[in-house]
Image 1 (tube, rainbow, N blue to C red):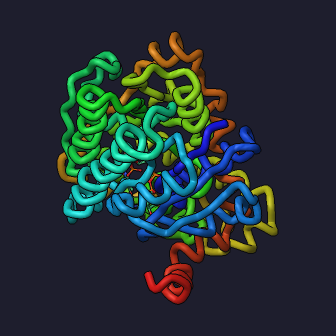
Image 2 (image 1 turned 180 degrees about the vertical axis):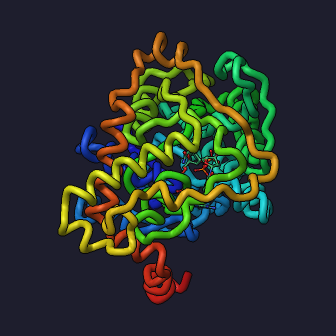
Length: 367
Ligand code: NAD
Ligand code: TYD
């Protein structure tokens, strides 16, 4: 029975993973370690509260002594490392926390795992360190380039992707040098419930509801390969169960979209929902479709992101052939679920956006 440490479990993908795992593996012990940065949100973990097998610990992955203590006192055998600074625009504005958490923090986590699992009190027992990474480490593709495989050379372009690349190399080195049992997944862009509204899809949805501009960087023709977050969680589950020690697996959605097409698609969905539902329209009076217009009127082209990668795409052959992995959600069904989730979880995103949740956290934890 695995006993998991999920780092970054109060973030977007981490929280979805916690709910997925507790549902699919109801007998497993699951400890979340999260520093509750601006991107961490305890409200995203509310559905897990009360489950006696779940425990939340506020703390930093860079705190090696804390991680060692948790691994030992909980007899944990699996780490799933989601903890990271994850937003490219923030990494451009201020790269330091990206190096601190993504590089130095991941290294502290590796040192703790090595200390406990290879040389310490739990030495000799089976263990697994899974590192959650991104397709952005491979750099940017041209329109006709083949998608990224696991052997595509690393060519990170932003401070975010460079810091993730550095952490991937450290994970690889701890396997090669010390024999730590590691796996790494490099996933494409995720979307779904609990995503912080600085990322494209929730930002667009919430801006439409407020009648605010929808900022499109550059010409809007940059391409991302979008995956519903639960499909990412399912891929990580398969890697934990069947992945080779030292293995690297790309996870993608076979689902390339330009940014402008995604934004127009979202506008069309919200237009239809608000036009058909007077109650919903009354809840969001500033949204253009509530007043007979279209959300597309909010689209605003703005200055491009510095160093903006043009295209990401994943070749899923290895994860399909070795693990039998296939995304289960279509883009239409995943987006429909996502829109529905944001419309029915207004208190979650209002609290995130108006800062009252941050205030509450400060009062609770002195954070
Ligand atoms: P997120 O920003 O929503 O969440 C990150 C979480 O990590 C937050 O809860 C935050 O409080 C926590 N955290 C940050 N620094 C910490 C530290 N030093 N110690 C402990 N906790 C800390 O990120 P996300 O979108 O959920 O991404 C999770 C992981 O998946 C990241 O490693 C990211 O690189 C990777 N990834 C994300 C995507 C995507 O589309 N979002 C795609 C591929 C890979
Ligand atoms: P984002 O969600 O930040 O993910 P990433 O940069 O990791 O791919 O952005 C997705 C794409 O959308 C990316 O090409 C940048 C673009 N984008 C905009 O055009 N406008 C925005 O307001 C945001 C946040 C992103």
